[in-house]
Image: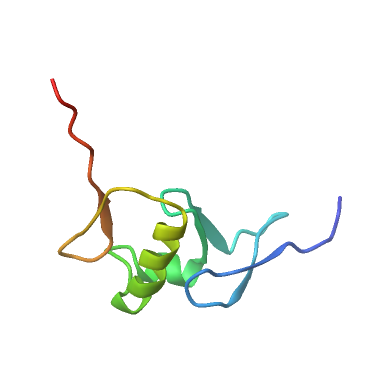
Length: 85
């Protein structure tokens, strides 16, 4: 088994965290296509810190994430496009 460490940088706070083997100190957030350390992930269970809002909006625009609306408790919610018919 390899003893190599796979280090990643948190997209929110910039700290490094290790992912595998046998150690998972971060999370991938597929909805936003970001990787975050466990500290950021667990601290933001009820919505992202308002200090990260500018980064998240910029990141989502670059990824062409189409329909977003700010939620009252923080974070963003996808808005489904209405279909005619």
